[in-house]
Image 1 (cartoon, rainbow, N blue to C red):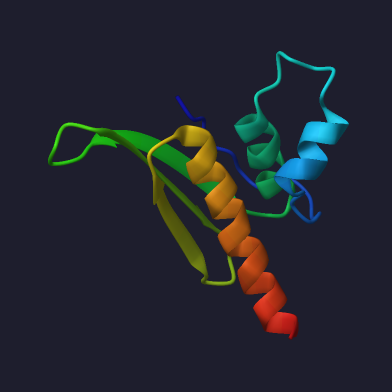
Image 2 (image 1 turned 45 degrees about the vertical axis):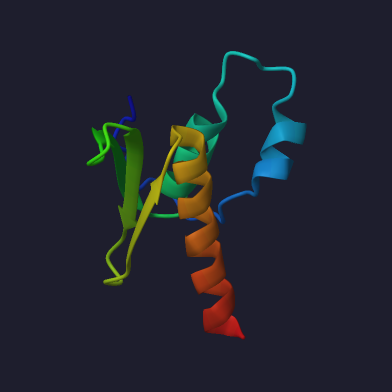
Length: 99
């Protein structure tokens, strides 16, 4: 299950490819945990939950927010996919802001 994280410091979340290269020797660390830590370091409070949809399939829902009033919610079929898509949505929003 996912743990809830609270903000610590301000850094930009890493992409999954950078995470894989950086942590390829550490098999005990899960990619979603690394992304979650990066989101927390970027000032986000976040969480995730699994649920069953109307057809009995497991779905994962992740959300993140911080004090600026923006909230991001993502639904996916797998936990890692949900967390990666959450990070991607936040990154896209940040890029759109500066473009």
